[in-house]
Length: 173
Image (tube, rainbow, N blue to C red):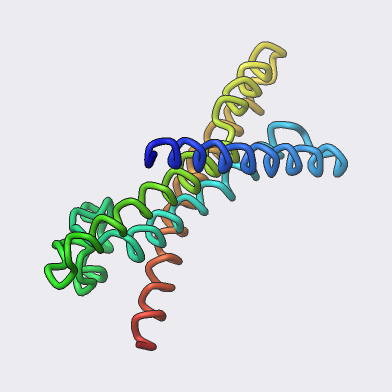
C-alpha cells in the first residue's frame, strides 16, 4: 500500500510540475521570448527550488540519520539537529517509521514528481540541438554554459536559503 501511495505522489507532483512548466513556456512565448530562454528560466527556478526542497525535507523529516546533506559544506550548521546526521535515539521506532514514510511520500511528490515535471533538461537538450542544427553555434554555447552555470548556482542558493530558514526556525524554539 505504501508503494502505491508513493507512486501516486510522484504522479501528482509530476503532473503539477509539467503544468507549471507548460504555463511558463506559454508566458515566455507571449512575452516573445526565445523558447530556449524560457526553458532556461524554468530550469533556473527549478534548480533553486530543488536545493531548497532538499534542505526543507531532510531537516523536517530525516530522523533516522544519514541525511543527504551530510557531504555538503553546510554539515556543520546542521549537526545540532537530532536525527539529521545521527539517529535520533529519543524517538520510538514507530515514530521513526512514520517520519521515514512521510519523507518518502514528500520526496516523491516534490523532488521526483514536481521538480522532475518542472525542470526540462530533455527539452533544453532538444532546444540546444535545434540551435546547433540551424547554425546558431554562439547561441547554443551561451545556452549550454548559462544553463549549467546558473542552474548549479541556483541549487547552491536554494541550499543556502533552506539552511537559513532552518536556522531561523530553530532559533525561535
